[in-house]
Amino acid sequence: MDFKQRIMTAMNHEEPDQVPVMGLIMDPSTVNQIMGKEPVDFVAMIKNPDTKDSIKDMMNQDEFWNSTYQSNWNDALESSLKLGFDANWTIYAFMQLVEDSESSLGLVWHDVFGRVWEMGSDNKGNLILNYSRPLCPTEEAWEAWVEEKAPIFEKAIEYATDFHKKLVDDYGDRIMPIGCAAPGIFENCWQPIGFVEFTKFTFQKPGFVKRVIDFYTDYYLKYLEGVMRSGVEVVLGGDDLAQKTGPMMSPEMTEKLFGESYRHIAEAVHKRDRKFIFHSCGNIYPLLDKFIEWGFDGIITMEPTAGVELGKVREHVGHKLVLIGNLDVSYLLVKGSRQEIEDAVKRAIKDAASGGGYILSAAHSHPYVDPSRLEWMVEAVHKYGKYPISI
Amino acid sequence: MMSNKTPQKLKDSLLSLDMDATMEQVDFVVKGDADVTVQEAVDAVAEALEVVGKRFQGGEWFLAELVYSGEIAKSAMELLSPLMSSGASQPLGTIVVGTVAGDLHDLGKNIFINYSKSAGFEVVDLGIDVPVEKFVSAVDEYKPLALGMSCLLTITSEEVGKVIEGLKDRGNRDKVKVIVGGAALTEEFAREVGSDAFAPDAITGIDIIKKWIAS
Ligand code: B1M
Image (cartoon, helix red, strand yellow):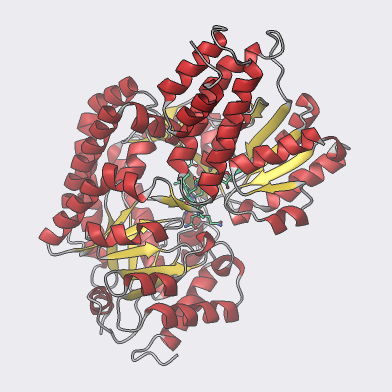
């Protein structure tokens, strides 16, 4: 079987030749290590008054942004191929560098959706980018943002489609790009507004919250069409609905606010004969039935640090969901020994792989994940994951 | 007109997540249009928050309810606190809080801050990605009764120990209690690095600090 047949057989709850293995490679630190490249100290260039403005001008040209971004993801897929993964997620983002006095660097990234992303470096000088705060904490600010950015919203879909298409064209015969749709509807509703404010609005301004959700659902569905047009066969929706101890909102509230949106997403994907897998960190046990009800084909992550165990999830959902995960990134894939990794792989295969419907992966991306440990992980899958499973 | 049922009504409305009804009761107290003291109203809010904590820990309530009840309590306390002790606002003390260096997660920290304010503490929020030196200097500057650190990434958890070491180097360790929380930490870890307490959630954290004051 080739990588694609392996993944698709597992996605159909049948047993492939061996357990497929998926990469969540994206962090520059991991990629640079695998590719043997030196980090580009972007933050140092921003700190330097001689280069700051030119960097800003350059990065804010769409063409330059897109080509740099694309080449980073080419490297991510090359890295994933080197390690022997059958698939890797692919995520598009469109951002602009903006002056910001609140930031210690004086510059931050704004994404299309109204979120501020701060830059930082890891201990080797690799760039780290993270969502840090909202830009639209009031109803008025949100309305104004959406109106002002309308042309960019449309443009971002075009760019995302091109981005995924290039990856499918250039790598699709060697590895499966699992294309991420737009940022998750739940996340993308609260992050531009802020969690506390968004929560307050759900109680105090339900009409506004509905408008926000409808807006992003509509946008998400268009974005999803673009990603699927690119040729991607499995689409990943990333949306952290939970935290360590349980869902952020009760399953009832999640259903009431977002259930319809998730159903539409699953329908749209199935209409195009594609598969939809859903990523949420945190303790997702109370939402498992919802994932099935909403029509998802699979779930990815199952965070061990939030107490989620593959075996228990399989017991609960049977073969109604494909499971993808869940090797720990807090210790195991950062500092674990070869033996510990081998044991974890064996346990995961034992707990979830029988009958197909299981793809092994890390529980999350993490800049400190060590490439050699990922290599050990893949080797262990190849050693113990041959069907019929005999562990 | 408020009756002596007010504390109960205050509690009930907060626990029904009804901001308007809660603020209506608070308004009665503020206008002196009630037969309960400000202190009794404040105690009612505190009792309600204890129930919130139990509901959250028991899995009956989720983060959204925890956040919103914290917001209601904060709004109530903003009006009630200045009236305590014949008009003078008397904060229970100062807490310095931040998320450790390298970590940008702030939801838990912000919830902890909201609850601290509702409980009557003054809070200095150092923000996210806070370097060791900033924590240590803030203790020098604000002389807080407690220093709180939030940490969600295992890789940055060593920062917690570094801050505690920094406090020792500056001769301040025994002048401030250290409380830590966040998804990456555990009770055992907190003990190992020499903090005084681990808080699995924001409300437990506040309870711990209140107990420190009482003792
Ligand atoms: C001082 O006294 C106190 C007292 C009580 C205190 C306290 C202080 N602090 C907290 N508490 C306590 O009170 C609160 C409740 O009452 C609780 O607070 P918490 O903070 O624990 O809980 C919050 C209220 C809700 N929980 C949260 O907000 C965290 C939820 C999860 C899903 C999460 C989110 C949302 C995010 N993340 Co991140 N994130 C995850 C989380 C999964 C999880 N298991 O928690 C976690 C923490 N993230 C992780 C990772 C890997 C990352 N994240 C990252 C980024 C993000 C977002 C920006 C997308 C977003 C944060 C948004 C924000 N502004 O905070 C990156 C790191 C960014 C950085 N440098 O900090 C990135 C590295 C991802 C990447 N590859 O870029 C994982 C860490 C693994 C580990 N153990 O090291 C993770 C466990 C997810 C996973 N699947 O493994 C208690 O702990």
